[in-house]
Image 1 (cartoon, rainbow, N blue to C red):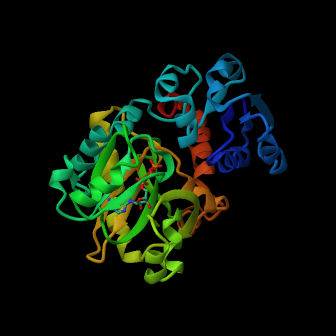
Image 2: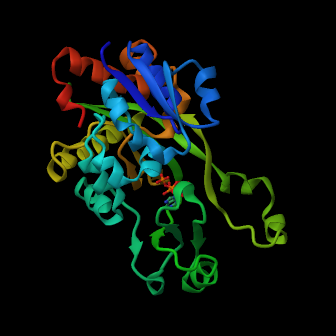
Length: 334
Ligand code: ATP
C-alpha cells in the first residue's frame, strides 16, 4: 500500500494502528518521548516519531506528507494539537474538519442534536433557574474533572466557590444509565453502521456505592467526580437497536445540511438511557472514542456484520482502502 496511516500515540492509537496494519497499511505513530515503548511492545507501528511534547505534531507535517501519511484523529490528538492547528494542518486527514466547529462549540453542538430530533438534557441559563438536580460541567474540563452535582441554587453556590473564574454549563441531571453508542458512517456505502456500545469507568463516582451512605456522610466532603479511567463493554437490549440506528441516521442527515458534505467515519452519541426507555443525549463525539478500545478484535455487532475481527480502527482503514480502490479517496480525506 502506497499510503501510510498515522496518529498520535495516545487514546485509541493501538487500535487504529493495528486496524491499519490488518488492512495492509504501513503505520506511523507520533509519540511523546518516554511513551514509545508501549507502541513498540504491541508491534502496531512500523515507524515511531518521537516528540518532546504532544503538541509538536504540526512540526512533522512536511515529513508526514512526504510519507503519504493519512492522519486519523482521536480526542487526544485534537486536544493536544488544538482546533486551530488541526484546521491548518496540510497532512491528509480522515474526517470532515468543518464538523469540528459544530462539535467544539456547545451551542452549535446542541443545535445539531436538536435538529436531529434527539432528546437533550435541559440547560439552565442561570443558577437562579435551577429547578431540579443539575450537573455542572466546566468548559474544556477533559475527562469530567471537577464536575459536580447540585440540588438547588444554594447548593450550587456552596460548590461553585471551589471553581473561581471557570466557565461552566448547568445541565439537568438525568437519572438513568450511561450508554455510549458507537457508530460508523460510510460515505462510500451511504450507510450508518452500529459498531458497539460502552459505559465508562469513572473515579470516584463508580466507587461511591462501595461504602454505605452513613459512611459517605461520615467521610466529610465526598463529592462525586467523573474522571474517566477506563471503558467497560456492553451489549444493549436488542429491541433498542432500531431506535439506536434511527438516531445515528438522523445525526448524519443533519450534518450533511449544517456542515456539507457532513460527518463521516466513526462517531459516538453519549446518552443516558432512562427507565422510561428514552435516550437522553448529552454529547456527540465526532470521531473514534476510547469506548471502542475493548473491541480491538471486533464487537458482537461487527462480528455479525463482517464475520471477521473488525474494530472501529480497522473499519476506518477499510473505508480508506476501499476509497483508494474505487479512486474516491477525496471523499474520505481532507
Ligand atoms: P468528553 O466526552 O468531552 O470527554 P467529559 O468526560 O468531560 O466529556 P461528560 O462525558 O460530558 O464529560 O460527562 C461526565 C460524566 O457525567 C459521565 O459519566 C456522564 O455519564 C455524566 N453525565 C453527563 N451529563 C449528564 C447528565 N445530563 N445527566 C446525568 N449524568 C450526566
